[in-house]
Image (cartoon, rainbow, N blue to C red):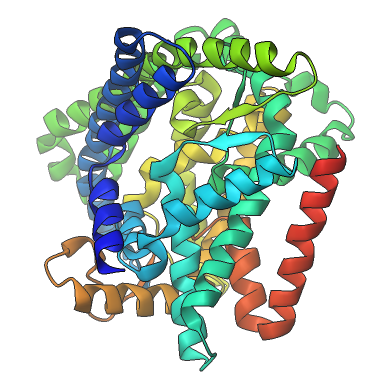
Length: 466
């Protein structure tokens, strides 16, 4: 068991930038692509992950100090500390559930394909930490409740999350492929993204019933035409960066002295908005040969009777202009929202480190809002408000998990919870899928486990029928 755990821990430790080129190369050779071409495709994807890491790192390192000063100046500090996704991933993978999550989920995926309950082959192995996260939190939750076999309950939660995600990936694949160019044969089996899709569907239809709302049907290209330079993500990035820089100055003297830093923050924010689409184009370039070869192989083997999707990371499409614009606008709004909800007593989480993950909220929202900036912003506002409450409610068990993992791995600084704070993260802890599973297990106990089983089986039957 220790040997197997160490093997998978080593694989996970390679990171997405190393894992995905290896996976793509092996997959490409298996489906008949020349080794050199498969390797090139894999390297493009790996370089894309490296570039995306550099850009989001720039966003975090530039925005973080300014936002911390804003928090200090205006006294916005809340009780749930934003650990960010690295801490959530560390908690997820540094448990028994996390160590075995890849083989367990791959086995489930293969079984569901064989019995016709899914079309998605989920090769986005790095993002399996989402399934491991809810499994790890459930493990510590059930252990605290005194349940027998808490590890088994952890795997139960992870598998339920995996099944729900695969079904949603299948059902949304066509909408995803139609909206994003070059994504034929791809689905997104990432639960954080898929959890917000129902909100986009329901809120979008509700907004369409409002008289005159159709006049606000404006996408990113429409913003450029209507507002010119002011509608460009690059320019909006510069403006938002400068505004946050100004807010981080406590008086007029500091504002004047801080002009170079404020302008620098604006340029860096603009750079992030401009460079993300260029980086994500590398993913598409690497993905194209694999996608085409997969479709040809399936057509040759099964004709038109079968269609399979390659489950990929949502990082492929976070460079969409609407995603950039709406995410950027929501960053300062989210801070105000967090403080406002804290006054109502329903939120204690102030997102800072997690704000770089804002882009991923909209991956599966845009296909259902058709890229409408106003619709997407309203959906984002609703799901972020709800997500803040979810993070607050889950923070106790997230803290227990983080502290126990930290005790076992004292050198891992990512999972250390500051004294006097609870732990939270916008990444996945705010997902409706995560909270559905957590809520059922925490509040409804064994009845909740039964409800989750019925939901998962029902979704599989429905998906197979369709």
